Image 1 (cartoon, rainbow, N blue to C red):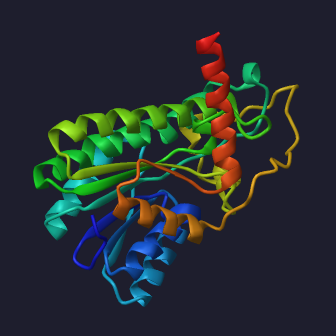
Image 2 (cartoon, rainbow, N blue to C red):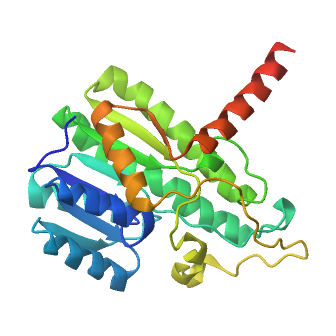
Length: 271
């Protein structure tokens, strides 16, 4: 599909990082943007920025963990605008990096609820409208950690959630290829992007429980991958939507990490 004025894009996790950049990229192309986040102040700020670009925009404070809230969001968008064209299930969190066996149940639950169930809730709420219209595109944000484990780069729960998002996206694409072939699916697997995701704890709800503090808590490490600005990532996503690409990675070294894992798998399968 070609991104153009008159279309409506919904972006979760829109108040910062990749989500904010996606909202701006869609607005520059004339799309109406529905920015979704749990952090009210920055959400209001991004909406003001989009209004400054002279395009329609609104902010919705929604916790993507809540399936009923996401369903209500989809209904509200279609009621207000009569359509939805692009859905970016982008909201995500990380928790303190500790050894796999020291990740608390609370951290594992919160990570999976936001990173995986948030995507599934978005699919459940919005895809029926795309199928009914026979057009549109879904973008699910995973990570390089959804293509290969990244030593020193994430926790076991984060990696599991992002692998699951890749698998969910591939499954959705297979289904839509039969039922609504004009609806596209892209999974975004970025490497390092300057953002506030490492400060995700600022939005951690009280009911999520205490974060992990293990005796094996690990220091931050340099991952050695190319940092790509969020604005560049957003442009890659827009190009992927228009080209109907199934996968977006953000740098050659991210792709090589994934290739190395595939080579290891093939060696095991052929062995």
